[in-house]
Image (tube, rainbow, N blue to C red; front, side, top):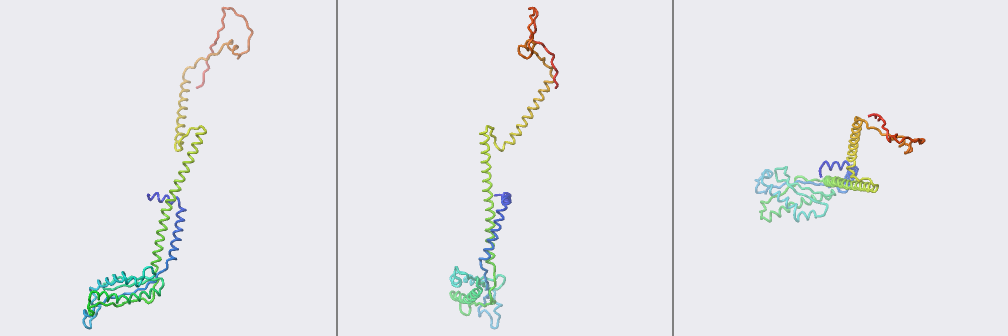
Length: 301
């Protein structure tokens, strides 16, 4: 399928394209209204070093280097497995994501809880923030980390109210637009092909019917596409015949005239073209010619 053919078909079936665009707009609006807007609640959590690595009276925020791998491990544990399923069961409307903040050079985690109900989103965010320290402690217990060498978590920011997010609605609208435009494009092309083939079959049937009628009428059957060429050929041949006839007449006018033979009176009487005359006997020696030569009349060329 070439682009010029596709564009020509779309231009030829513009009414189908218009109907498809109207249907696509209606589908996008339906998707926008049926998919509820999400409510998002965000929080940021910082991984802190163990107390034994900070001097007495020291600042723990100055010893954050090398803690990013531990933050990545905690994010993986929260997003997968039984922890995530227990907090956000599959098939429900609530979900959350824990990811590392790559805009920050420190071990900062971003927590995002979403739900169509703003209160449910806030409640889920609080549950996730309460579960993260226990999960982090269990991970360090399994590898026998001493209590004074364990990493801890600190909540930096937390939303008190959920914010409206139209990301789910925009995704639904984009999917509806792509689907509608695709159906419009390929559906119009398929419809144009069907209509073109139907028109060709109808034209072939009409030409066959005309040929059958000409055959029944005794007229020579000619292919429909060759009628115009045959007519032009016939006109050329007729023109050549007229030219040949004119040349023959010109040659005949230049030649010496032939004598015209006129029948004698007796022959005319016998033929009944002249009035009968009284029979007068003539001597045997006197003979009447049967034919009389009449001077020819010159014809105009």
